[in-house]
Amino acid sequence: MVRALNDHGFSESVLEAAGYVGVAFLDYFSIPCDHFRPELEALADRFSEKVRFFQVDASESPSLAEYVHVEAVPTLVLYRDGEEISRYEGPYSREALQERIESIMREAGHNRAS
Image (cartoon, rainbow, N blue to C red; front, side):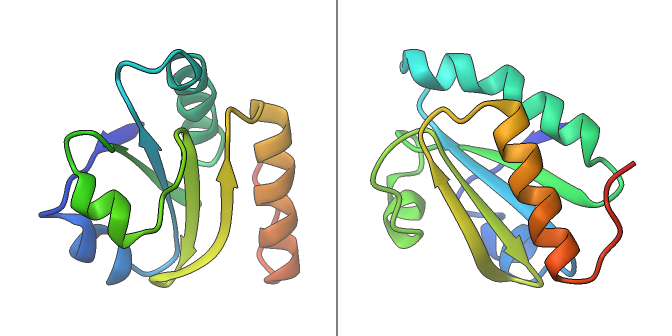
């Protein structure tokens, strides 16, 4: 499940969180973002035990998007223990993102998602 997030919950939900967190910056009036949403939901289902996923409407939270240095939407930022470890700009496919996330987890010594 992908949860909505804005400026007020970012620190607690992402920067102070233990483990993996994925934050997707989207715009609700963007066609690439519309195509990316189902991919994000599928990733959230796939990694439900290992990664918490959030989505931010970049047009409703411009200060947060600026703080995270989002230059394009969609952008998916992956954090581990509050630190950014990877960033994906553009409408990547579910398979490409899944492979990258699994690779990051393998490199960190965590088990591959089931």
